[in-house]
Length: 276
Image (tube, rainbow, N blue to C red; front, side, top):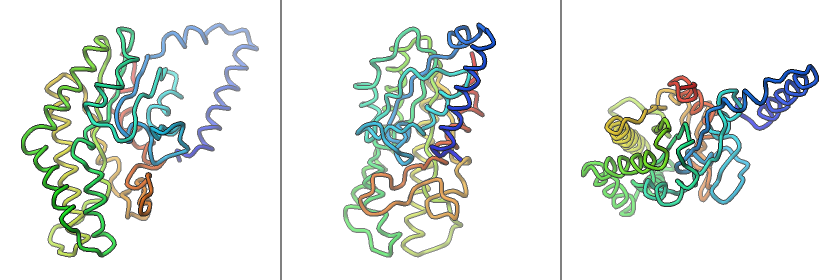
């Protein structure tokens, strides 16, 4: 599911159908192409496709990300995946809006996690999963993320980003996604270091998604929650859709190809890739 071999088979099958249509003298392909929704994807590593590889550039854009999966459908024409690893909401506004215009019909965005420094929390607090005791770096990273959430700064940042996209693509439907749980939530009451980190990660994910959802609702954008789609498939599960990776691995705690299939399915189920 979601691997490159399957995608190549899909592409080969689609190409075969197109060849048969031309051989039969059918003149529907140009009309279908013209009717496709013009789509641009924006955001951070979770929109770029990091974790699913192979990568097209140093932004960690992958042909297996959810926007590329949408491009394989009859309804969608992916004009560009402008998402790039490590980017914040302000980076989206500063460097990813150049391809947007009045003809853009659909924009998806996954961004906000880097505003909280979520990578630093994984790096410095996630050592608890290996039995180590988190140090001051973990406390500092957690305090920063908490301040961004409790002070409303993340909410304001996401609102500003969406408004920037709306100004650049005034006729587009804007769909903003949330983030999955990187580690499946566990029952309350456990006291081990690993369990405490999972509680922390779960709480931050809930607060992050809550701020994004509120910002989307207040700006007229559509919010798509992916947490339930990933449940049971966290990084430590028997069937992970999140890479656990290892020390220094850029793919750690990012979705794998199956995870991006789940992202695509959640967006599709919410009507993001439907016409209109």
